[in-house]
Image (cartoon, rainbow, N blue to C red; front, top):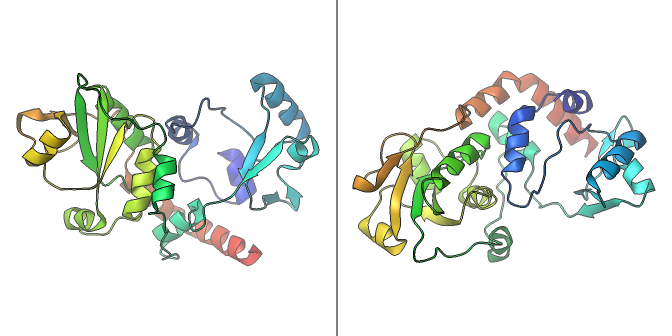
Amino acid sequence: DASITRCKGAPPVMDDAERLAMVASCKWVDEVVPNVPYVMNDEYLAWVIQRYRIDFVVHGDDPCIVDGKDVYQAAKDLGRYKTIPRTEGVSTTDLVGKLLGTCTSRAFLGTARIQRDFSGGLRAPKPDERVVYVAGAWDLFHPGHSKFLEACRACGDYLLVGVHGDECVKERRHRLPLMNLQERVLSVLACRHVDDVLIDAPSEITPELLSTFRVSTVCHGGAAPAGAGAKARKVASPSPLNSSMLVARVESRREQLLARHRKKAAAE
């Protein structure tokens, strides 16, 4: 937290423990290293390479400059640096901008190719596996969500997660979600506890849904969803964090975050 605050001029929305939990829940991550400095100097880079047998340090293909210096220069000097193209239109800056009301852009992520990339490793349930179903908005996907899904996954052998469409969320919450359906689907697909996703899931559980996906348990955190019947099972979230808390944090740091946004916009 301190390193990010010093280098970016504002603290992160989620703290150290929350961000560690979030990254650990990503299905492409094998291990998480805590307390990494934002600017990796020669000494730290030498230590992390030796300690974790790292071959490459990777970052997006946008420049990362602090105090006029390249954050990744030490890795570049060692020939250990690689870049990955950024996904256009998707960034933490844009998401915070939506929360602050300074950004209204819409990410276009609903292509078959992108969904295929995020769906890597998904499989159909085996005949003898108990299928668990849980549905929600999953807006601003955070470690509270991932820990809740982990608890739901423990109720059976296979976890199918329904993601409500934008209009369904608006009807239930009286506002549109900050992330559109495609963004929310990709967030859930990236979670290691999820076996498959039902896109644009209905607000009510129908007999056809239960039969089609062979659902044995319908998990929920609040009131049991209509239609779940005897299959309903309430699951207590292991984390107190929710999306409203994140929104409140951003609002409480509005001036700091706005200043950072203006500085970044001027640099671009």
